[in-house]
Image (cartoon, rainbow, N blue to C red):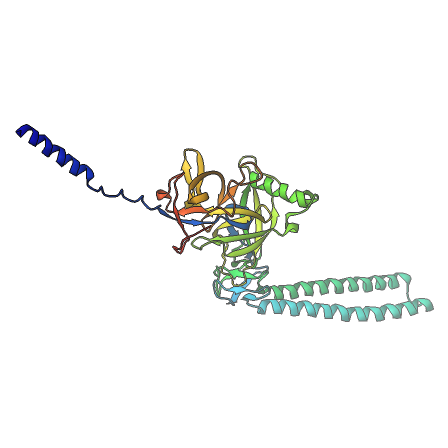
Length: 391
């Protein structure tokens, strides 16, 4: 009986356990939240980027054309001057004295010529009456001609002296910024190219930008230009009015604008580059010759491109791909071909088949929460403000 009682007790206990209500299974986890955005379609331009430098269009070494002592320096070191502004004044007294002496010689010769004319006229009249010889008349005629030549020579000498007096006032041959005065009041200056420089002037408005373009970008630009203008190879580069933007070291972006006006006539075979020049306005003289700059110039006309945030791009060995949402907010993988990165952090998506990109502006692209998204699994899409996205 004891054995039967134990068996009945065990059976009753097992029956009771089996009939007890089991707890419900836990609900499935909610889809992870991700931020999505549509690819952007924008009109862009492809640029060639280069490092360059600023240069003055003109540089002049100011020297004296005459010998003399400096009487006054009429500018402050580093001034911006206009063409014709007075820079140095030499002591003018010796030049005025020489000019006065030359003018007096002209008057002397003119007085002598008047007398010679009268004597020639008188002797010519006497010759007709037999009171003078022909040789005397001919000599007087020659004297008249010689005096006339002496007058012309004296006048040219007076003009030269007048120029020397003018050159005693040394003016700016061009407009621009001066260096310091290398000779000051009281110093003797000589005329000639080997004598000391008084100062130098560099033109600053406009300012030139020199840089090098590689032959690949040059070929792209010329091929693009040839499509729209078959005569472009025969034209000078200045005729195309190609814009250039540039920035100084320490500046953000490319805040300054210029226009390309010259390129060299050949590509350097050693470097595969060609030197190009642009001109930019510089009315306040803030851009100084010698500055290093970052420059960019367009190599294509504007065209429409599909852009995505660079942070949304994932890598699988040598492949690049993005995550997009399909039906039911299921995550899908799309392999893409990438172009250049723009300044605002978005990257160009290129057509892999030469015609169409693998994504479109209507796609919902996962841009944040990529680590939570799994291919072929659903997610909960949110916009950049954290609001749910339906489509």
